[in-house]
Structures are given as structure tokens and as C-alpha cells.
Length: 296
Image (cartoon, rainbow, N blue to C red; front, side, top):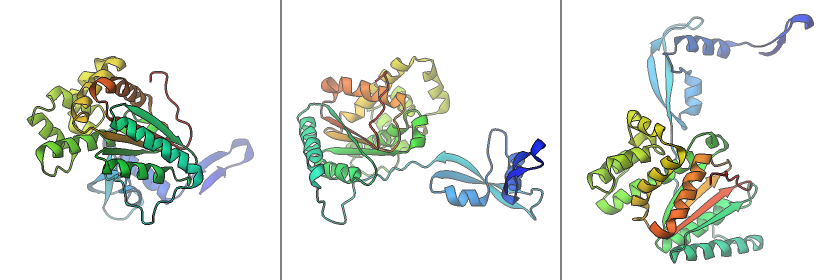
């Protein structure tokens, strides 16, 4: 139940019920700086968040002992591949000019002219299908495709739109040089350091975007750098793997804004691309015209 309880001169808006009571009991049992959730929350969230099972606990109002769940880290959607359409792709007349423009941009990137383009429009207008068609043609022409998806919640997390991009870039670069399968970003980072493609400091820099590849204590060393210097050091490290993947296409797709840190890094990357990594095409897709920060 939720609603006002009490007389008009002294009423309160309250929420009552077994789920509220259980939430309060779990909050009291949760470890310091941690969270416990019920099996119901776990069942609805396990596709998006890693959990570990707690020790058996007992709470007031619930019979017997039971396990709760402790949320850990968000599950990254790494498997963003360019899927083959189930039906032939037919371009609507209103989208033909957009397709032509994207293909021209792709050709420029292949010729060593770094390019960026924005694709915006409401839902169900075929933006993703259009981009996938261009990416498929680019892949056939030898482009490496690096793709990520973001939601409106991700605009509050620094570098989140680039996390999938950088993870995929490390894995693809490691597989290219090793000539074998490498299935995760941690193994890829280890290989790149072992082969002297990365230095240990590069691993720490990349850890600013992909936290799983670097120790938290080492990452704290970067906190003293000013934002511009930090962005430059991260791009220094990124260039070491991106130049090996040329030509490549970065696709930032989703319905949320891109955070300021990511815009600053993308601006630094594109400014240096002509001299260091010229065969790059960047596509930013969103429902509304993207909000680009002044830093970028």
C-alpha cells in the first residue's frame, strides 16, 4: 500500500507491505558499504548486474534462513556484432541521401581522412539498420568495426560509451597479433603488456575507461592529473592499438547523451588522428541532436 495515512491536519505519505518490510530488514543486515537484495530483485536484474550469493541470513517476519544477493558490477554488453538482416535491406527514399552521405564518409576514411558524422532521429526510423548496413559494407572493405550502445543512465558515468569500444579494440588487437582467440579484455591487456605493445602505464591509462584491466590503487595515481593531461595520456595509450586496427569504424549508438569526459577524449582522438591514425570513421547516433560539451 502507498498513500496518505492519518487525519488531514497531520497526514503522512507512507509505503507499507511485505516487500517494504523485507527491504528494511535487508538494509539492516547488509555489510558496511554494501547492499543486499531479495531473490525477486536478483531474478529481474541478473541479466544486467553481476551478483554473488550472501551467507544464509534470518530476518524478522520471515520464517527460516535464506540467501540474499550482493550486487557487484554491471554486465557489459560485449557481443555487439553487425548482424545479418533477416530480410533484404531496402532503403526508403527519405533515407537514400543519408546512406549516400555515410558511404561517402566511409570512402574518405579509407583514403586516410579522419571523419565524424552524426545520425539522429526518433525511434523506429531505421537509424540502427542504416548504420548496420554501412558497417557491413565497411567490414567487407577491411574496416574493423568497434560498436557500443548506451542508455540515458550512462550519461552519468565517465567514459561509459567508450568502455565497450576500448575493450573490443584490445581484444581484436591482441587476437590480430597473437593469431589465436582471446575472449576477454583482461587476457587481452595481459598479452599486450607481455608483447610490449602496451607498457604497464598504458594499462593503467586504459583502466580509466575499462576498470577491470587495472588495479584500483594504480588508478588512484591518475586522480592527481588535470582532466586535459589525463585525456592526453589515455589517447597516447589508445593510439598504440588503434593504429594497428586501421581502417576502423567507431559506432556510438544509443538514446542518451554522451558524458563530457568521453567527448573530450573523442575530440583529442580526432584532432590527432590525421597524424597518427588517419583511417578512422566515427559515427554518433542518437534520438536527438547530440549535446557536445564546450571541452570538446
